[in-house]
Each structure stands twice: as C-alpha cells, then as structure tokens.
Amino acid sequence: MTVTVRPGAARLQSRKGLASAPAPLEGGEADLPGPVDYAGFLQVTLPQQEKAVASHRLGDERVWLKKAGPRHGMARYRAMALLAGLFRLEVLKPVPNPGGEAAIAIEARRLRQLAGAGLRVPQVLAQQNDGLLISDLGESGRNTVVLQERLEQAAAGGPAALVAAWREGLDAIALAHARGCYLSQAFDRNLVMCPDGVIGYIDFEDDPGETLGLDECQARDWLSYLHSTAMLVHAAAPQQAGAHWHEVLADAGETVRERLLQAARNMRWLRQLPKSRRWGRDTQRVRAAASLLARWYSLNGQVFAAPTRY
Image 1 (cartoon, rainbow, N blue to C red):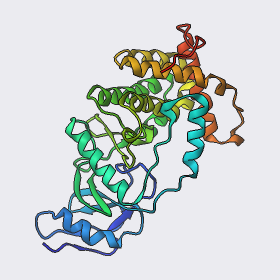
Image 2 (cartoon, rainbow, N blue to C red; image 1 turned 45 degrees about the vertical axis):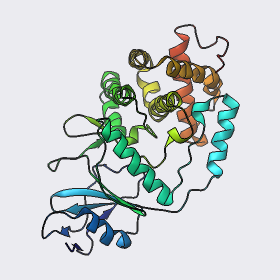
Image 3 (cartoon, one colour; image 1 turned 180 degrees about the vertical axis):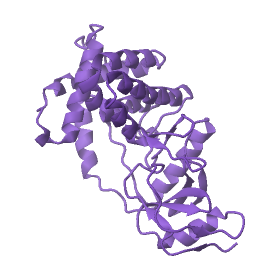
Image 4 (tube, helix red, strand yellow; image 1 turned 90 degrees about the vertical axis):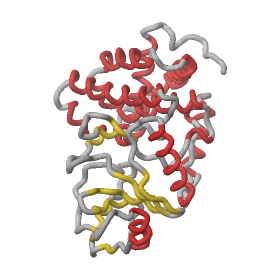
C-alpha cells in the first residue's frame, strides 16, 4: 500500500514527555485509501518530520511519531552523580538518556514490556531504527489529561481536591510496582488520565533497570513523583498527603520503604535551601520534597535515627 501525506499533515509537539497530551492537531490528515499501513506511514513520514515528536492524524486515529535525535550530552549527569554520592543515595544515580537510535529501541522495548504486564501505555504501531510510531491514549475523539494539569486544576478547588487527585498518581505508581514493573521518569507530566479514568504512562526513552536494581528503580519512581508534585502538596495539604503516602507505601516492598527512609534522612538538610524563587524552580521542588519527607518520617520518630547501610 502506498501512503501519501498531505502538506501540513503533522502537528508538531516539542514538549518532552507529552506523547499523549491533549493538544489540538494542526493541519490536515494522511490519505488512507485502505487498511492502515503503520509501517508504510512511518517510512514515508519520518524523513519529512523536523521535530523529535509529532502528532499525526490517520483517518479518525491520532498517532505520535518519535524520531531519533542526537545523543544527549553527559555534563548534566555528572552533577547528578555527584549529588548521589554526596547523599549516599543509589536511587539518585543518573540514568542517561542515550538519545538516537538507542533511545528509540529502549522506548519500544519498555512499552511492550509494560503492555505485557497489563499496564496502560501507548501501543507500538510501527518501529524502525530511527523512528517509532505509537498510539494515542485518547479514544473516540476524547483526549487525555496530563496529571500535572489535573493537579493544578484540583489545587484551585482546595486541599481535599488536590490530595484526591494526587492520590490517583500514587495508586498508578503502586499498580505498576505491584505487577513487578518500574517506570522511568515518574513525574506528574508523564502520567496521563485516560478518558475512561485509568491513568496511563508515557515517556520511556531511558531505562533505569540497566543500572539500578528493581527496588532502587521503584524507590526512584516514588521520589520522582514526589519531586514533581511537592510544591503543590507542601503548600496545600502536607499532613493529609502524608497519610496517603504511608497508606499506599504500606504495600511496597520492605527494601523500597527502607530506601525511602534513607532518602528522608540524607535529604533532610535540603530543607534549608533558599526560599527565594530566584534560585530556580528545581531548587524549590527539592526543598519542598525534602521538607515533606522529613515531616512524614519524623512522625514515626525515624528520620533522625542512625543511617542504615545497604
């Protein structure tokens, strides 16, 4: 089958990690004279696509095309490695995104693994060395909602609404872990609420399991989610959120809980980071996450105990 693409068929989406974000499409759609030939569409469209990630319409279906990009520089990872050594936290060890064809292969493999575990992830429709075509998590013309946006909207409704939405993210991570899996960058921007109310998972260009054990990968998921949401939670409902945190983590593996306790101990001094926004949003997120961990674990009189060695 020959697949042709009308000019302007692709809506380009450059924000990393929003492979199923509900942004509107721009331009037209691909001509589909017969059954969808995903591999053919990928082969034809990939050379025409300029951005790393683009949304396309194939008839009534929305798909996402990811193309191999340049390899990522390592300078930023050296800083993370330094912090991991300083805090004695294996879970903070950097997991470099290799970029290029390696990142395409990793994402395709991880999507298939997670789908095999029954988790809601985009379907791999077609793959070649330098590109990947995946499905959208929306359905019947209804879009997904990125959890980051859902949390921000919920915060406007008050602490109870925020904590309820935040708990949905906790439960989604717990579900993946209960099935023996781990995510990659479990930030709120990489969790999406599907139209049927199920949370899906996106963005798997790196694989922490290549350098970390399963318990470390899962602890890293919890810390990633906390880091991305800590500012909202700390400002609105730290005590209520802490109750949910402990309730969900009661079912986590013992080693995972120990590693989170270790993180709380080793990160407690980060509560003293400057409050001023001129130090950047990441600094504020780290400060809020450290404050929450210290508060939640000190309730049990544990944070200031002697560190456990692994």
